[in-house]
Amino acid sequence: WVELSFCLPQKLHKKHFPNILVEPESIFECLEALRPYHTILLLVDTQDLLDQLSTEASPALRRLVRQCSPLRSLKTLAVDTDLSLMQVFQLTGHLLYWGKATVIYPLCESNLYVLSPRLPIPIPAKLKENFVERFSDSLMETLATFSLPCKLAVSPPLALHQPRITQIIIWLLQHHLVIQLHTYVTLALDEGMTTSCRNMSQEELARPAAVGLGLKDIVESESGHSQNSEDISSFGSYGAGRELETLHEGDQEIVKVQEVSQVTREEILKDFTHAEQAVIMSVPAASNVEDLIKFANLSKYFRGEHHLEEMMYHENCPRSVLVQLMDKFRMVLVKHEHEDPAVSMYFKGMQ
Image 1 (cartoon, rainbow, N blue to C red):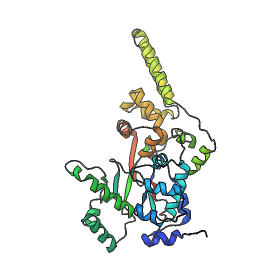
Image 2 (spheres, helix red, strand yellow):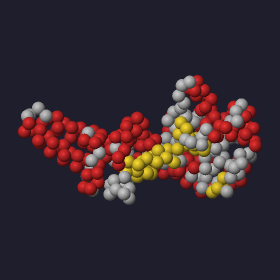
Image 3 (cartoon, rainbow, N blue to C red):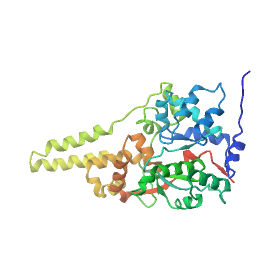
Image 4 (tube, helix red, strand yellow):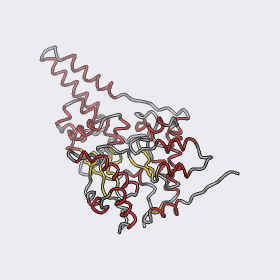
């Protein structure tokens, strides 16, 4: 005999989260929106989930469940479990469908959390009891601390309690009581905050990531779909080299250096109109060619649709570099914070 199981996500998810309506189509859309830098957070105990699996359950699913951690991305999990990223995405969809996991961005010190707009009012008494039993603290007082955005990392002397604080945030995420805020950036070169700079194609967005983007891109990648790459750093070194070559040739050559530098800056900002170039060049940081190259390279993300963590992943760039660059060009950048739509896409319906 072969055991067959089926699931009705609408009923299953509503049982655990009465104020949230989940449709199967929303789960599939969420899976398409996932990226290798996301991860899954189990909603049940690891051993309990393994015990619930049938004896004929996929060995790959068992390996993934054992290795699951809110600290490791899907890409890392694929390496740790010796599975392809495609398999990890498919198993993630299975766990989402059966209400055994939710999607988050891996926990790190810079993460920012705030109360969820889907917070059930009033808070169920069972949740309060479970929280007190687990952490010997008041759930209401804990939630009050997230009325304003709070970072995961805490400064001394509270750093001694960092492991406990991390566990509390994991519990709150499992019960959808808090959400993570991501920083998005919009380029504001005029009053309408619009720009003529070209739109970013999927090929460019996928370029820095060796494994592609979402599930669809991974399928294309594993089918032999190739992406063209473009190295902007070589362009930057070219411009800098020409300047250095003429610095030692006297005052007459300095004029040529300035002309070359000006041409280089126009080349860097060639995707912007002359008016937009003038606004960008009015920023003091634009006088540094290296910073200007970084700004031009990242400008395709400055449309309010890509958060910092996504930029870090695709450009293989540390957060500190991004933050410093945004601070230097803050005169033409607008920052705003909200939840990553990909992690809550299957919560489309709310009651």
